[in-house]
Length: 306
Image (tube, rainbow, N blue to C red; front, side):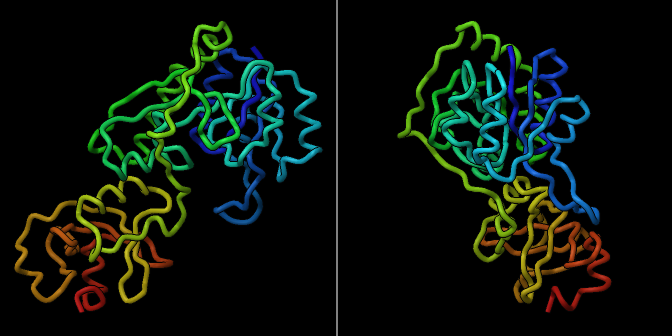
């Protein structure tokens, strides 16, 4: 079984590593071009490209999926194209290149949450379960028939990082067996019910903005869990974006909020929402380090309570 793997982020790098360590023949890797490093000057390879380098697997990082790239791909002989969060829409010719099938590993139970942010969507919607779908790729976005799926429960405490790690582990546990079953015609294809399809959009910096005057406490907590890491959750005070790095439910006296939406308490910075209250325990002002609410009270009490 020969495989061409396409992916970019850390989660996909873990899947690539598990496939290589399982003895699967990875003939090549496709990943996003190197990007400017967040740590300073120079460029940095994607997590998948870096992992492929460690494993000694030839890697392509095309800026365009053009004729030159097509020439390189069509010279390869592979049974499966396995895609995990590559980050670009693949042309139809590429889906027709593998000897057996183009496979996409999608982090939802299709047809639910087609699109770029299924993990965040499952948390934002307070779902009780999710999973991975092993599907045959088609021209439409995540519309192809499904070979199989694997489910897990979502815990109330799960944030995006927790859930992503669980889904990666679920994939690592099953992908080798799933590919062998497809190779040996032991898995049929089930068409997706388009009437039951839902979609999720790409996450951007603005996705993490919260407005305490328009959102419930539950909605804010779900956003905090869904957007942990990047883009993070933030609110604006006097047109200044302030990132939230820690929060919890507020169980204190609501009478303290007769005049202000923000109030420093012993537990942290308490804030009114449309239905109750939350307490921010850690926050970050633009260009500054993360500080506790206690430190914020000592240096910015007038800014917040005015």
